[in-house]
Length: 365
Ligand code: PLP
Image 1: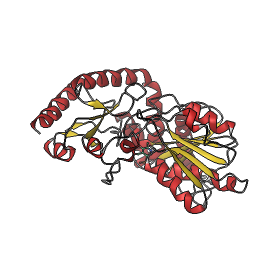
Image 2 (image 1 turned 90 degrees about the vertical axis):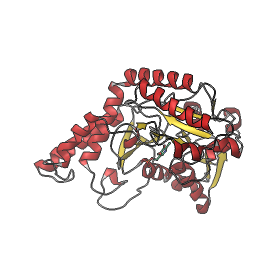
Image 3 (image 1 turned 60 degrees about the vertical axis):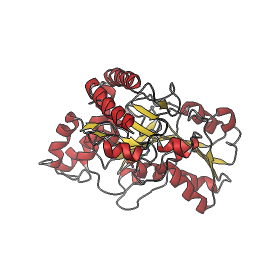
């Protein structure tokens, strides 16, 4: 099996596995216990927090969560306190992941005015249009850094500036960007996920700028600054910290490797059309379409490559992609799109072999 679905999840880095192992074995202390085993676990968790924080701006705090979805839900809590001050608008591009989009839409039931802002054909928001809807009534402006389906990079720095100028808070879904693309230093909050950075599943984090008031999501023993009660898993936190530090250490090597894979893939699929901007994108994502292609059939024919249909959202719900629809693609074009995601552990040979298999199956149709 050739794994080309690195936006869905990434394999665990071997170094991460090794770092986690003791915490699943003899080092089983509760990081919130005052005795020596507890203090050792606490120290490991705090080191991991620092490692995760390294790729975020100075002047903020990292809170561990179970997933990025949870972190994003936690971040949205800021709008509650702002509603009382007359700020009841939430603005986000129409192409956000369900973890942001559906959370925002839920706030409609709480009396918020939620604007799903259209994107251009290239998948990026127009700042000239966005500025018109971010006003003194706006509480939160959310925007992902790298889109999980099409890899397009949003102008998050400029969006966060617009939010700040209007007195609103900015939230960045950095799940697909963290460790790959620089995080703009003017954002107020950002969410990430362990399993997208060669770390473990079941751990995420929310970074919050000092001074931003996020209310508790889970009440209980007061862990994670009282925002997210519950005993932390040292193994998962250590794994995420190690994964983050590897991303930092290997940044140049990873970037070079992914760029080489992307260049080879683009050459192999040169007669396909790229969905979204060809330039403003993370190169490890290639979302492409071919006229008349039946992707469901392609996926059942190509059993030796793990990739994703562009027509289904990443959760595998089977819902047609709202992202591709937001680019203005017709239903047929959406149904003829695939997503290939390259990662640290793919080789050029794998790209060539997968491309051969996919192109042959597409030809056969
Ligand atoms: N945001 C983006 C852009 C994602 O790609 C994902 C995962 O697919 C999430 C949020 C949710 O992450 P998690 O699986 O940690 O909840």
